[in-house]
Length: 113
Length: 114
Image: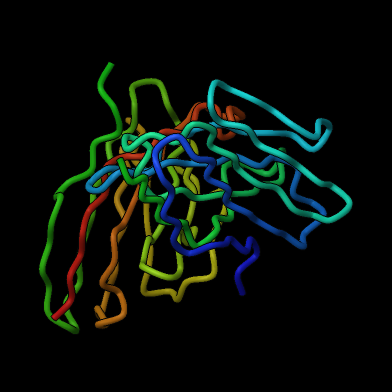
């Protein structure tokens, strides 16, 4: 059973556009939500993360929006660039139970020049 | 500093064989976690080791096992390989309690079972 549901599976965006990836979870014990970026042939790398005590976190062109009541969170990539073309994974974890993360199934993002 | 090193990068095995994958964490990292990545399933947690002890275990059959050595290097073993075990196996290391902030993945071992 997939504990974190991610959509869309793939996304094509024009350069300069906004990319939006959505995730939903059910387990209310989750209280840490990171996003990972993975390029072909590489392992996932942490992009940005949020705790549920805030509704939004922004780092450069990347923003996480978090809706605790709906148990949903999303990644927004502003001014998308071809170099952002990668696979993005959302994840969730209970903060205090070691390093076990539950990942979404991934979104393949292609940014067209 | 050196990143997380996984060896080998690629591996082809036959059904029924066993395989051992290796992971060398970042120096000073004592927690090592293993994930299986397949298309459509994303990353599935296998297990986590800390100070040579398995601390967490995912929902995988007993054919999947692991261990950690005193220098924090970790190995995972898959016995009686099945076609469905074909995947990218990733390990990640971190400092204890660092959470995702210190969670660094290796580039993985691509296992193909034929």
